[in-house]
Length: 325
Image (cartoon, rainbow, N blue to C red; front, side, top):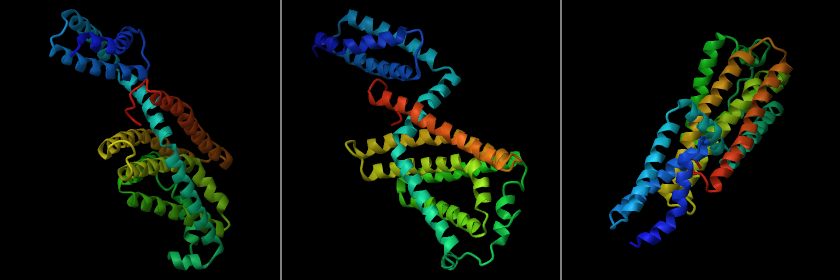
């Protein structure tokens, strides 16, 4: 090994590590970069030590790594900092990078459920094909099963139940995506249930009640399901078409992104559960309840296309290791 040439080739990277090690305050992205450069420099030092090294170079690199190690230990100890890094960078970036997949799932879901709703509302044959009873007043009447579902249990218990159920549905949609067909089936069945219920309420002349009870929580809740389904299908498609990476590396990369989304959606679905448990069945006027749901959705989309876009661009520029692409 030509030690001098090796040193010249990596001098800029070592200078960057030194800069990050001595900087007073690091962003989440810079903290990730610090860890990556520390690991690479450690490997380079080990390589130099095995090839008749220059003692001064070894001493300098050892001192540099000691400073970097101390800084890493200082930046990784705070739980609040780690949470801030996750929700301020990794989670929104993963959402943004997968946006075309979950927007596509949302489009297909809404078109399917709308078509089913129109079919159930306008054509009597739909009931026979889908096995719907002729009399559904128990579901659609004022005070019927559709409305009482949101108020028949204590609010806190209902919110917890909804959170658990939604998290389970989203997890299944996400992690069965690697098999593709099970995730597609799950999403279709949810679209079927949503569309049939909407069609029955429309047929009973109670579509206003349907939207009044669904939109306060369902706007964000369905978006979370779309995200889970889209990210899961992206993972499955990576197994089919890994692109320029090896199949193992591509699936591992998308698997990390799916795990990031799964963890982040726990928080999103908690908000959905609180909305469904406390806002949807509340005595607030319907326009206000719907407005609360729309505000929650708008904040989530702003988070994805604002914070997520910035975080994703930083990853794609190559300044930060893309741990969750």
